[in-house]
Image (cartoon, rainbow, N blue to C red):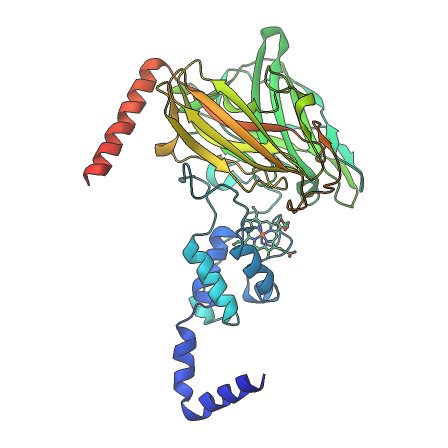
Length: 438
Ligand code: HEC
């Protein structure tokens, strides 16, 4: 304390002008940190976002700087759990911080978190109301909205499920889905809906389409250019599958809405997509390891693996691992027909509190020829080293509650005709060759 005050006094008396240039060379909130927070934090940390506090103004940020330094330096915030050292790294929705940005935030906090000159602030972002569709700013209001029936989530207790089936008169003509969003109610629904999905089905026609899937941190999906998902006309059932988790407050009559945006009438997509497909690693409904084989001993680890053989060429556009509280990582690897292996993506810091979808940039979407094996490895950590382990003394078995375990990956998949595959693969090769030539 004493030394500091002496120094400041000495500087103030002897060379007052030198003090500010030295400080001004370090990062300030207004000039350097606010732009980072706008890009990477405020989506959740603004007045109506899902984050616990707003990080918009200097006054709002100032009390949190120690926690911010800690979460940012350890890459806990923003939530982004992909291994940055292996696999594909170009994502459409990457809001993680670069090493340089982390360095800026850390240096700024260490220098006393100076505000700087408010004139340097970037123009504020006008965040849309949290009760509105997130896709509204991009696509306007949805063409179709279906709602779940009300469900009251109790204040305390364990996981709760609500799977209502809604009779739906249907749309008058076949349409192709371009985007869909899953919107829990605001302000309480967004806190209790952990994940869910909704399907439209016409049992007599054997027709099913998954309209939307949601997990904390992932509410919507916009399909890649030229790709569509078909909805047939006519009466249908809309089946919701909602997984709620209580937050200490009763949520009366929660209703989830699902919005669907269609391609224009008469549109014919170049490719038909399956959208996000659930690939099971715990083998619940397949011939892999059976559910009863998912047993994790107290203070132990477990790795499961499962392989899928692609019986047609396929393009992948997204990857979203799903496990529960003991889940610690999941990787997706391609073993090509010639035997070469490529680790496509690895989430090595999985956190059950988040269900992030990693959406590949168009030019890196994996193109897998027929016969490729898609190999998944899921890892569980039931030790004290897992920060969200509720009780490492317990045996953990397969089950639907957050304290039980499961394992699957939601993978955005579009099957391709052989010709289309050859064409896309050639395009990719040509682009790579011209990059190398540069
Ligand atoms: C996708 C939404 C989202 C983004 C983006 C996000 N956060 Fe968070 N943040 C949350 C939520 C939800 C919590 C509370 C739960 C938790 O701690 O995981 C939280 C918690 C925190 C905490 C801990 C608060 C406490 O109670 O101690 C800090 C600090 C924080 N965030 C800072 C940031 C910073 C800085 C950024 C950007 C660099 C950021 N967050 C980006 C959603 C987000």
